[in-house]
Length: 293
Image 1 (spheres, one colour):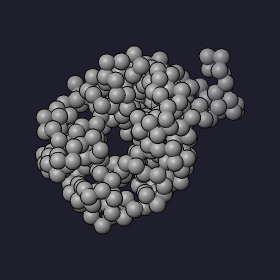
Image 2 (spheres, one colour; image 1 turned 180 degrees about the vertical axis):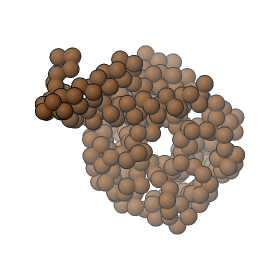
Image 3 (cartoon, one colour; image 1 turned 90 degrees about the vertical axis):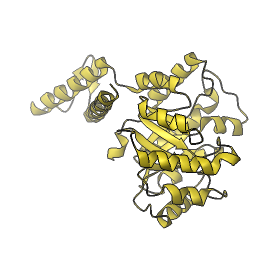
Image 4 (cartoon, one colour; image 1 turned 120 degrees about the horizontal axis):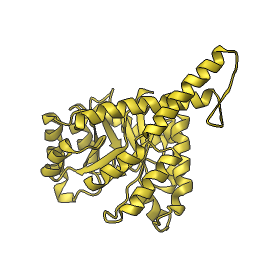
């Protein structure tokens, strides 16, 4: 369960076709970087992108940032070779997209194991209506799943819906994925916002996602990092309150009381668990940000 505490406030996609972007990612304040071989990469650049990403990971220099590789679909002409190339070179996780069932998860794991990545954690993308409806079976398919990412752009398209500021068309789907992830102890990350100029909607989406229970947000541009990090970082007042809650209930329990009132709110054991989780994330984020400075 330690993987659930790892900061994933900002998860930045970095196209493998551009070595400059792969280099620049080493200097950005993103918690995680997804070195991307998937759909956005032009067909003619697929193999070159694979070589670029392998070279970048072997070179290192990403510090404590989580390094994830998104491979092409297993049934594509590049999928198997992608997995063989990146299974054992030092990435933190492999991201599989277009996952729609537990069977898809098992196929991905089998391919990764056959390539020598038997201990490699994986992440899965939920980006279609059937994947959302099957989120529970996907989340429960393997404990090697450390994170579930929602592909909101693809999902919105497949729903024949419109992307709006309020995100009303996908709120139910987002909640279902969060429920599945939390039921099985998986981290869960919100999808991207493709309009780089509409930072008002982006910031709103970050804060809405945080309040819904996401751990962070997928990003397409470095300019979005600061907004996402800010939204998903516990505030000083929240940290202070968490410490107060833990201390107050401990004192109440020692005096024979099962509950206590803090700031006019009843505090029980589950509040202490939430407070402890927030403090642990705060400590890990503080440690990570010290490296960025």
